[in-house]
Length: 289
Figure 1 (cartoon, one colour):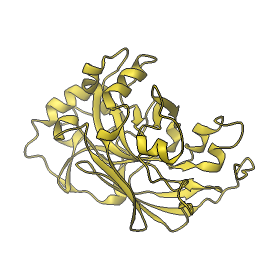
Figure 2: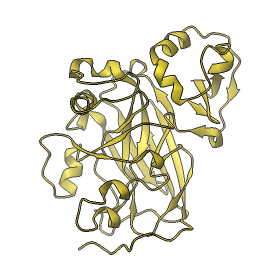
Figure 3: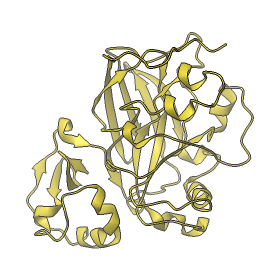
Figure 4: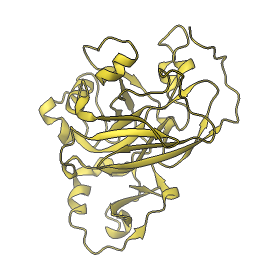
């Protein structure tokens, strides 16, 4: 866990400061932990009577705060492709979210002008450098799983000539929130079959299981690593199921004062509020035809 910018291990509603408990053997730097992930896991298994502290939500940051690369997968659930009237992809549809969009699990997010939508997702955090990794070995390169939202400004995303602005529309500050914790795959009964979803102002918008993915986590890691190296701390947003606001009739988009609650069972829950951005948009946004 990222607790006030320091690396911590969670035990229920309490946390252990890693640097303090290890006597300085491990740094408090959250991102640095991924470079020594195997060592850290072995040490964490031996922690017994370390001092703990409460976990206030306001102090919880993203479990991978400075990823080198942030990948995301489009159309990875059949029902999501169907609701958009799009054919199923033959291979993973990959785009990027820029690292500046990463935020914590309980932040207030500024809404730019346009049509801002929600997408509940399972997020993979890489723990070991992965290049040309086989599917059968993919999980061994995963540090853990966390909860995420691929927040998207649809008008910029679909601005002609599409998909030119796809990544920019998904990379405003706060548009890649994740957390609250990072759970190692061995802590889950079946890391390939997890329930996820989100609710907007108390009304459920999305609910599905990750076993419904077209391309599961091992396939995504193998596919991406067949093209370029994945580095410790890198993120993979694995896609969203049906229920997004843009395709609803009427549309159900995010507005000032809304509360968005996102969960993955067995990992945790994020809660975000929204305010209007205080800055002008650099380009004119028009409603796509």
